[in-house]
Length: 242
Length: 225
Image (cartoon, rainbow over all chains, first blue to last red; front, side, top):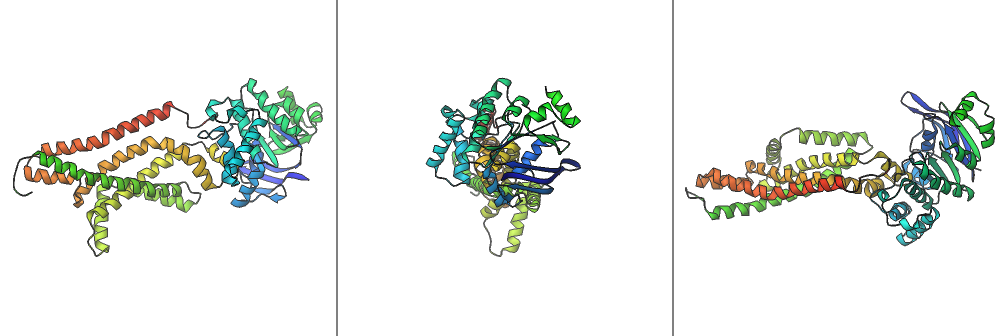
């Protein structure tokens, strides 16, 4: 069953049509990687899926529930949809541990000791157990991004959205973040990733979606997309990224 | 005090004693202005357009007119509509509270706007409601930024209380008028009054500057790129 399902989604910023009739189904346990040029609508699509951007037309269904503008429903949905940002967006005034527990204690009303146990577990998962008491500005970019991933994991999401999560990182720090994502993929986490890391996309994806001018232009298995693109736009894009 | 006499230490003591009314009024205006200002700030950043416009209008009216005029207006408005004679203290407290709240709103709005929009988004993305976002994520960070200018506001509030002398509230400036009236030593009297204000305000402005430097030299208000 599809965990995330977009049907003819349209999104405009003023006169600019960012998403045009985008339809996409993401099956539970699968990894979908979205590629395309800057401005092709990849990030906007991702932001629409957890309601950070309201859509103008179409329907988005997550986990069997249609996305609405209703605040309460949206908050419920966001606990099930993890979002990892390009710029990490850790809360700088809180320790790493507190960054992770705050969603549990404030949103899920979980008792603090229980939340701390979860924080320790998810931090171990991203390999940062020793950074419990650190603040964001004491961590490298790669470490911050892994904490951000842990912050999402703590809420036990049904699906995770990754918005160019290595784009702000120095090349030598990308690897540690990608490794964490690969590990999640192995464990069967449903994920949608927007990325410019083509090698990574090819190795981790079950399906690749190529977006162009706000549309799903071409989609398919990674090998087919990279070796036998059918549209000239994708062919050109693949060639430009080699 | 009656009759002409010399300026003595007793006058200095009288002025210092009158300072407690300056302090009391400042405290009321600052705390009250803080509470009202916090509410108006919430309205100012509300997603409801009507609330925002109300807050903008509120701030513009209070900042676009002289405090002295506001004092007179409240004074006559209240005496006109409330038959019992209200003490000048109450009128002064109302006028100064509202005036201070408008400045607090502007300081805090600016501090909140200085927090990256992505912080709101990150908080929303883990399922926080708007109020939870403000309380747990935005306000604590904004407070750091607001601290120095808020202490600066206290200085403005203290100096603002001097105007209440004109509606008959006996704080240190009014006390100075009374003393100079009987001693005919206005220069000396108001020098003492000025020294008292300086003693109150100088430590605060110094603190405000210290906090500002500490903030800019210390931990960055937000991480990331």
